[in-house]
Amino acid sequence: MTAELSPIDQAKFVAARRSVDFVENGMKLGLGTGSTAAWMVRCLAERVRAEGLQVTCVATSSRTIELGTSLGLEIVPMDEVKWLDLTIDGADEFDANLNLIKGGGAALLQEKIVATASDRMIVIADAAKEVAQLGAFPLPVEVVPFGWRTTKALIEETLYSLDVMNREVSLRMGGTEPLKTDEGHYILDLNLKHIGNPRQLALVLNQIPGVVENGLFIDICDVVVIGHGDGRVTVRDINSGRVENGSVDITESRNIFADLD
Ligand code: 5RP
Image 1 (tube, helix red, strand yellow):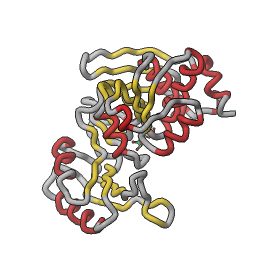
Image 2 (spheres, rainbow, N blue to C red):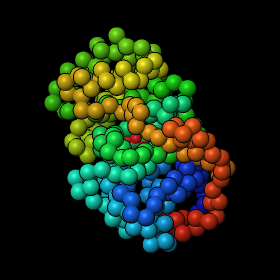
Image 3 (cartoon, rainbow, N blue to C red):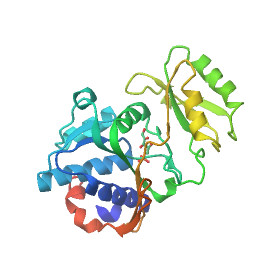
Image 4 (cartoon, protein in one colour):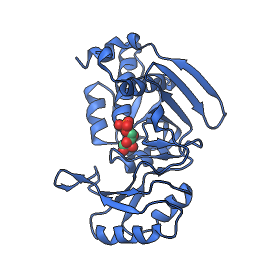
């Protein structure tokens, strides 16, 4: 199975595998959503199985609840724990300050609530997600369905006063219908190409009636674990400034891949 992984999946896997080394017995954990986070959930479940690690988890989407539960993880509602020790999640883009664009998997609302409620957030990503300036990835904005066209027009108008390079806003579809998030909201994707001031944009978007939350995560992420297709992993901690380079031996993860066969 490991030999079948593409370089990008290997990169995602090694970042995920390294990230679960940060998990300690007794922790309350936030589990992200997406393909990289799914590897992390598998790696965590393997540690729980192999080491008898006790952790309580909150998932950031119905997909992650399903995966985590199927692998035997204890998943509880957010309100049961309120605060978390650590959240591990993927990202669509990250910059040098560890500001993020998230929401490619339409789970940004729960992801932001869970990450903000955590003492520490670790982002796991393949190296291609690192950018000098956020914005090449369309910024997801979660909106209520009622009056969404008005909300979209207000967003477009607002973008004219902001430092962005492009101003295309599109409704995300799930087949022939608008895609609905776990909360029953819609997603507008803002194709901005370049976001000059992510902090300002994040604040301004959330002032617009109908906007529930935006996918800019500013000052939330503490650590990024960057995976490479050849097994190398870089861990960067924004608070301590520490950078650690290492590697993950993929052959030692046979159990995780065996589950997938
Ligand atoms: C979901 C997210 C994901 O973390 C993000 O889209 C990255 O996904 P992937 O790991 O599949 O590249 O924000 O809402």
